[in-house]
Image (cartoon, rainbow, N blue to C red; front, side, top):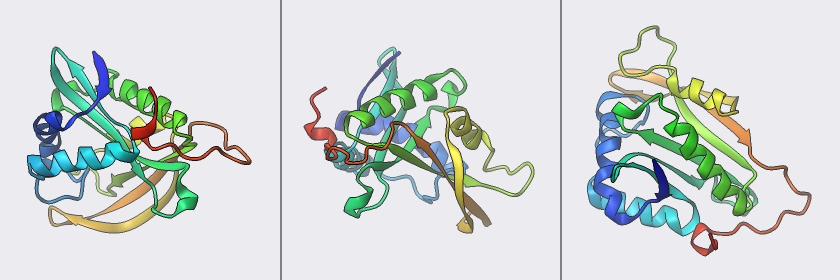
Length: 187
């Protein structure tokens, strides 16, 4: 498996991975699958500031992960929000771990110290649209829960909560070097 920077040419493949999450799960709160052009724009916009990575096996994208701004104000530049999606057939093979590790390596070079993941949760047993797999994955990756928004998202005629999990990926410097946009990083 290869992990590389995603390109706009990957938009269709990335859309096809994301679509089942929109259509079948409460993992994302989007109701409609974005079009390929929307994905091209998302990839372009993300790469200006943050990494957008694709996991490739036999020339097929099987997963992707990216970072985004945790908050728009300047004081948050050393923090980032992360997201990850794998093709349905490629779960539980260590791909998510490898994608996140590579994402973290690149973010550290950008002078990012702390990561946040916003994860949908349910209080219902046997929810047909959500499991605890994402929470458990993030715990295994070293994230801890730091907050919860109760019943804030409505999808599939049900209310869902979200938790925020965080992970420190580098020691916070007293006087950190400036954030380096991904597009300016020499790697």
